[in-house]
Amino acid sequence: MDTQSFIEQKIKEIKEKVGDKIAVNALSGGIDSSAVAVLGHKALGEKCRNIFLNTGMMRLNEPETIQQRFKEIGIDVEVIDVSDRFFEALKGQEDGEEKRKIFRDTFYKVLGEAVKESGAQCLLQGTIKPDVEETQAGVKTQHNILSQIGINPEEQYGFTTVEPLIDLVKYEVRELAKALGVPETRFNTMPFLGPGLTGRVIGEVTREKVEIVRKANNIVEEEIMPLKPFQCLAVLFKDKATMKGDENAQGRNYGDIIAVRCIESKDARTAEVTEISYEILKRIVKRITTEVPGVIKVVYDITPKPPSTIEYI
Ligand code: XMP
Image (cartoon, rainbow, N blue to C red):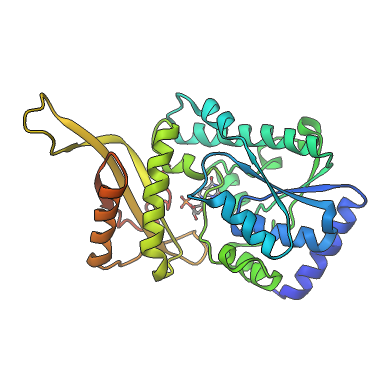
C-alpha cells in the first residue's frame, strides 16, 4: 500500500462524500476510529466532530486518556456517558452473540440519537476488511457492520455512512495511523473489541462484573505490555471457584475466576500464544488476587488460534 497516496485519495473521497454537511466520527479509541478521526479532521476540519460514547465497557481511564491525547494533536473529542443504557439493555442476557447484538443495537440507537442531536448528516466509521469478512463468513456479528446485516442507516437513523478503511487489514491500518500522526499511545494500542468489556464477561454483564474485569485487564496490560504482544486481555468466567475461607464457615466459599490471554499474530486470523515467563505470570496472579476484590483464581490460556478464537465469546 502506498500510504501517502492512500491518504490523499481518502481525504478527497471524504470531502466529496460529505460535501458541505457536518460529519461525526464516533471515536472508540482503537486504532481504526483514531485513524478515521485524523483523516476526517484533515478532510473536513471543524466540520468533522468527534464524539466518544462512554458505554461503560471501556478499559480503565480510557475516555479521559483518549480525550487528552487527541487534544494534544488539536482534535476535540466530546465524551458522552451512555453507560446506563447499555447496562439496562444487557440485563439478564447470558449468550455471547446475543450480547453483541444488543450492544450493537444499543450502540447504534444511542449513536443515532447523538448524531441527530449534533445536526450531522454523515457518520464516518472505521470498519475494516476482517470485520466484513468475519461477518460474511458467519463467524461473528461484528458490531460495526451496517449494510451487511441489513441495516440501512439512512432509513433507520437518518444519516449516511462513510467507511474509508473498508479495504484495509489491521497492519495496514497501523501503517496508515503512523503516517497520519495518530497519537503514539493510540498507535501502540492493541486490538480491542467494539463491544468492549461486554465481550470479556462470560454470562450476564453487570456493573460489578465489568468493574472486576476492567481492573484485572488493567493489571494484565501493565504487566504484559512491556513485552509488546499483539494482544493481551483478561476474561471473567461465569462460574466461581472454591476459595479457602473461614474454617468455621458453613459450606463452601466461592470466588471469581479470571483467564489471562496473550497472543502473537499479524492480522488476528491466526495466533500463537506468547511464552510469558513464570516470573511475570506469578506477579499477575499475585496482583489480580490481591488487588481485585473477589477474584480467587487466575489461569493462563495457552490455546492457539485455531482451534480457539482470540476472544472467549
Ligand atoms: P477472534 O476472537 O475472532 O478475534 O479470534 C479476532 C480479533 O478481532 C477482535 N474482535 C472484535 N473486534 N468487535 C471488534 O471490534 C468484535 O465483536 C470483535 N470480536 C473479536 C479480537 O479482539 C481479535 O483481535
